[in-house]
Length: 123
Image (cartoon, rainbow, N blue to C red):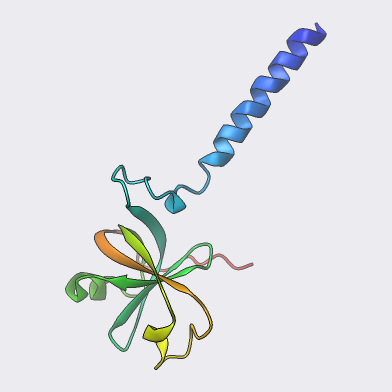
């Protein structure tokens, strides 16, 4: 009986560990099935013609992509797939928001509308 209980406990713990690994798939670079692609869900914002995506975890991404597509979804919750690269804070010299912070740039390949309102989680 103790061996069976230990085996069942080990299987249960393994299953919980695997489920925890899939809890945040938007940060997995290969989530979309294409190497080098990242999928991020969050709130799309615009300031002075610059588009940003603030993820549900609070990370902000500078977006590169077609303004005609992005402008339709400002203030909406979206899921964006694209290729990410690190960028300094030089692009934010007029806003001053990201001064001293490193910001990733995400080149938009695909945008999926999730909701007309942003559901930022309050902490």
